Amino acid sequence: MELKSNQASPVLTDPASLNKSKLGIHSRLPYSQPGASFSGKCIAIPRKKPGKLDDVRSNGWLDAMKSSSPPRKKLIKDFNADVGLDDFDIAYCSWMLKYPSALKYFEKIMSEAKKKKIAIFSDYDGTLSPIVDDPDRAIMSDGMRSAVRNVAKYFPTAIITGRSRDKVYELVGLTELYYAGSHGMDIMGPVDHTVSDDHPNSIKSTDQQGKEVNLFQPAREFLPMIDEVFRTLVENTKSVKGAKVENHKFCVSVHYRNVDEKSWPTIAQCVHDVLKDYPRLRLTHGRKVLEIRPVIDWNKGKAVEFLLESLGLSDSDDVLPIYIGDDRTDEDAFKVLRKGNRGYGILVSSVPKETKAFYSLRDPSEVQEFLLSLVRWKKLEKEFESATSSLFTKGAQATSGLEKER
Ligand SMILES: O=P(O)(O)OC[C@H]1O[C@H](O[C@H]2O[C@H](CO)[C@@H](O)[C@H](O)[C@H]2O)[C@H](O)[C@@H](O)[C@@H]1O
Image 1 (cartoon, rainbow, N blue to C red):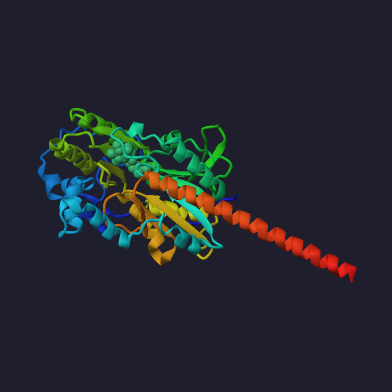
Image 2 (spheres, helix red, strand yellow):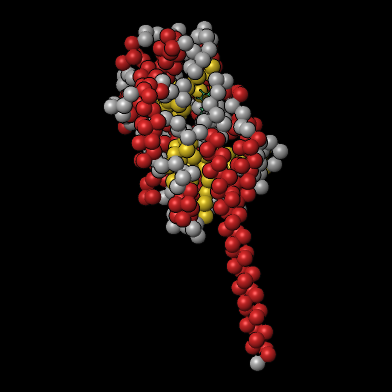
C-alpha cells in the first residue's frame, strides 16, 4: 500500500493564543526566552529545587492531578449529585445511555460500516493493557495480542500512544501495525509499508529489523530540549519517593501514581518550575501522570488524520475510522472523528466521564471482545461474499448451459 500525505506541517502555536490556565502555562511567561533555544547546543540544564507550592495550587494543577484518577465516590458525586455511594451501577447505567456499550451496539456500528473500509486506531495503556502501578509492567496479554494481530489481517490498524514508539513496539511486538509514539509525534508504518518521504517532517530511518523506513516526526527539533528536561526532572524528583520520570523521545512523563498524595504538590511544583524555563513546552494530564510536550499544533487527533490521509483513507464517505482509548489525550482523536460524523470514538472507562466519544467499553477485556467481534464479522462478510459470488458463477454457468442446449 502506498502511503502519501499532503498535510501541512504542524505550526508552532503561540502560547499567547492558547488557554493558558487549561494548559498549565504560567501567565507571566514570555513566548520566547533568552537561553531557551532548542538548537541542541550549549543549553544549560536548569537545576532548580522545588519552589513555593502556591503556583501549582493556584493554577489548578493539583485539582487536575486529583481528578485524573479520582476515587469512585467522588466521581459518582460529580457526575450525579443525587445518588449515593451504593448507587454506582445506576450512575454508570445512566451514563451509558449517553455512551452505549460498543459491544451491545456492535450490529448498529457494523451497519454503518457496510461497504466502507474500517480503519482501527487504538491507544495502548488502559486500552490494550490494564493500568498497573509500574509502567514497565504494562504487559499486553497473549489473548489481546492475538486479537490485535487478527484485526490487523483485515483492517489497517494503528496504535497511537503517549509512550515512545520503540517502547510500545517492544510491548506489542507486531510488525503488521502502524505505530504513532509520543502522542502522534513519531509515526512509522508497518515494515512492509512506509510513510511517504515527500513530507517536510518525514525522515528516512531503519526499523528494528534494519529495513529502511520513513518516519514522520513533526517535533524533531525538540529532541535535545526534551532530553534535557528529562534529565532535569529525574534529578529534581529523585528525593520524592515513588516518582518516576520516563523519556518518551518527544515528550516526558512524570508519574505520581506511587507517590504519597502529600507529596503531589512537590511533584507538580518540580514540573512547573522546569516548564518556566521552557516556554516552548507545555503540560498535559494523563492517568496519574504529568506529561510535558512541545507546544506544537499536533496531537493524537492530528495523527489519526495524518494516518488516514497517508493510507489513502481520508474519503469519509468510504471509510469508517474507529478509535479506542481511555484517557484525556485520546479526546483529541474522539473530537476529530465526531466532527462531521466521520467515525466512532470508543471510550474505555468503568466510571462515568465526560467525553467526545460515541460509545464505551468497560475495560481492556471488553476491548478484546470488541476486536474479536470485528474479526468474526469480517470473516462472515467474506464467507457471504464468496458464497454469493459462487452462486452467481453457478447461475451464470447454468444459464449459458441452457442457452447452448437451445
Ligand atoms: O497513550 P497511552 O498509550 O494511554 O499512554 C499514556 C501513558 O501510559 C503509561 O502510563 C499509564 O499507564 C501506566 C501502566 O499501566 C500507569 O502506571 C500510569 O499511571 C498511567 O499513566 C505510560 O507510562 C506513560 O508514559 C504514557 O504517557
